[in-house]
Amino acid sequence: MKRKSDKAWYALFVLPLVFVFTTVVIIPFLIGIGYSFISWDGMPLNEKTFVGFENFMNLFSDKRFMESARHTLTFSLISVLLINVIGLAFALSVTGKLRVKNAARSMLFTPYLIGGLILGYIWKFIFTDVFQSIGNLTGLNHFFFSWLLHPKYALAAMIVVATWQMAGYIMIIYINGIQSLPEDVIEAAKVDGAGYWQALFHIKFPLLMPSFTICLFMTLSNCFKIFDINFSLTGGGPNNATEMMAMNIYNEIFSLNHFGYGQAKAIVFFISVAIITLMQVSFTKKREVEM
Image (cartoon, rainbow, N blue to C red; front, side, top):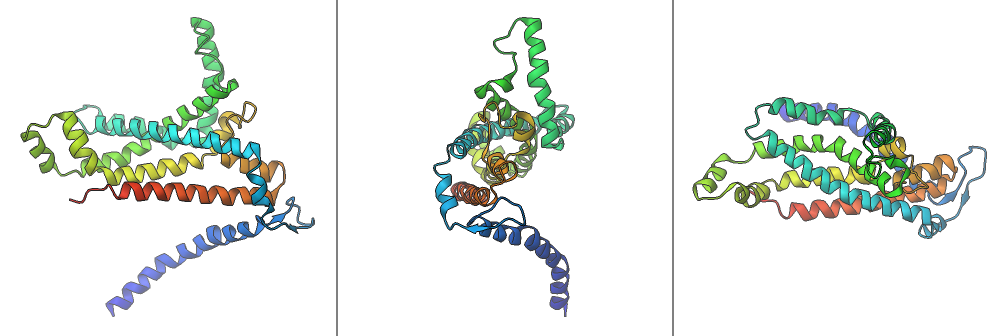
């Protein structure tokens, strides 16, 4: 009787989630796969023409799409590295002997609470008006100028904003990992003469591999899918120099009204992100240490 009662409770909580996930994610995704094989401008009364794999063949000769893939890869590699290094440094700092550790945690986590669109518009003001004002006042015009007007600096600006937003969130995951480390193992290493850096690299980091797996997965997937900061901070400019894959797909569908072609891009984008993140999880999972 108890087992039947438990199953009923499980079903009560799980079935609504399964229903929502199916209607919001699975069914639209399957419909999207169907759209990727047609040519259509999105107008309900206009004809949908079946073109087979033509949309998929065309996107590999689409220079703008391939450029957006290169921008996304560059942005993701640098951002993932910076976010995790800075997030881990934050976590090590606020789990040490810092007196204001609780206030520091709150302040470092705050940027994540600000929505990506709002964050982008705030930093857009900083990178244009504030930077130009500082440059005019100090004479340091070679650094303090409108970053968003220069292709390389605009991409760097996106990396700065994404790192500033996510490092505090990743810090929380690393804090949980650090606080769950077995104290006796670390104390034993200290008794055996291990210094701070030896204990950090040879004891703490191997034991933190589960945290690395989660943080790398989250930062990789978020950086590849980034849209809100791209939209509000640079709009893909200047001259499409910061257009990421998600924004390229958005423009293809909603600006150019190429619904079928845009869906083909979205399917390829989904498969690419899935393969990369699964490879990362598999790689880091094998290096996790069991206690």
